[in-house]
Image (spheres, rainbow, N blue to C red):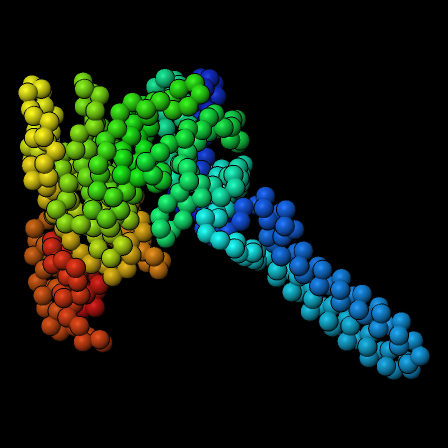
Length: 436
């Protein structure tokens, strides 16, 4: 890859005709902060493989050796032979260094000021060892941060690639000049074609998802629903006033599960009759969300940057009061914070590392699903649900015994460590039980 991968998604291509075979391609958005784009690097004469620099050194060495041989023509034969052997050894060392440099790409020059980005959108073929089919370089200082596969009903259900980009974004303070939503079409399953780009305001585009034949986008602290137009995306409705910034986004049915950058989860419902987005419930505890995974229509698992994993559930009956059927409710009735239902925390567990991603999958063929998570240091863990009461009682008793009998290299109590930010709840410490 040319830059750091940020997001990826699968797209289904082909099958436009009944006799055409359907295939899957993988779209990856890459971006790096404080880096030049490929066009700027090429204009500066920089080779990302390192071949240019090594080659120039070798040529300079060769020229110096030729000059030295011309000056030393009057020397005896033994000195010439020794010099020739030394030159051959030096050339062999240079050849090895050159091969190593070509195999290992090196870092390019650093920009002088903030707001410089290098980014591209890459199309891969998963069936052929993830070989690159197409790579589209973004504009100058434009960074692609998120992507999603979307099927617009007005487009006939064709799978399109939506990419959210920001231009000139700086970290401290967090600001950007412009934000765009790019819409690509996969041509013949191997090439990206830009359909149009839509400029958006209200902040950076950090998340997007397909929602009922439309595109749901998180733009700063605004959640916005788009429909496809001829020249750009058309805004249908939006929900403003979310706590900070929309970091993660998932959809199911008529609900959207929004992960905020600082204030945990927000459950949103789309009212099709009034064409508006309604806040159903939110979490009472602030969490800087890094990833989320939908478990069912009412339950979601989240991970935060402090190394915690929590399972949150929508209270029973909260969704029914979110939509006002009669239309007699006062506008200020639903905007008060104390009237918004709060999510119930079912489970809580402190991993100890920043959780960067999680998914729901089965570890064995035909087995029960479990929650698999990964951390910033490369750890892969799994949360497996219990299916019987006997297993719960046995492992609870085993965990209680191991808390007192297991060796403690650091002297810290296991339960206190797993309850670092909040008390551990409804989770058995598998690492502690494994030391039995």
